[in-house]
Length: 166
Image (cartoon, rainbow, N blue to C red; front, side, top):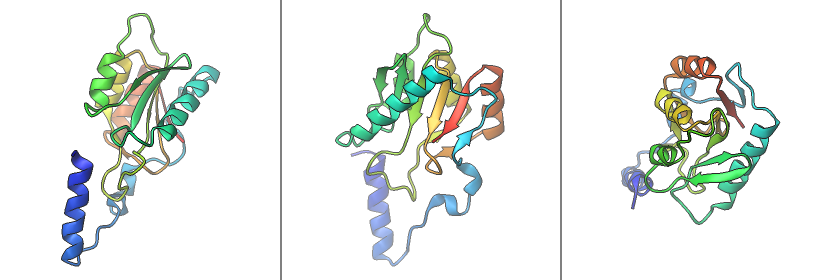
């Protein structure tokens, strides 16, 4: 059934015991990002097209409850995250032909409980994206967890990658 179903069941158990569940970012607001660009590299016109296609694709994937990420390169959808997760999806996107082209768009699933289950990225995600030949990562405003923030941004800047929050 997946981690989301398990987390919802735990919330229901807490609720029966009159324990309320609050947003995990209430006590750690520094773990999320607000709208903006966080790197020296900014998306260009081609990147913006890829970003829009990625967001549109995720918005249209209502039936696939496990999808929170897609990869788009040259206005073409390369991969949709499956139950294997973002890491396995990025592994399949590795390209020797393309370097610094394409984006990972990672937004919450449509039915995701944003109190306890948010898309998470960190240095490992940036390394995997670079190995896949991608130029950037796009997250949703205040609906993400960003680990290893300074290390990740330094890595992105060094590798001419961008981090954008929509």
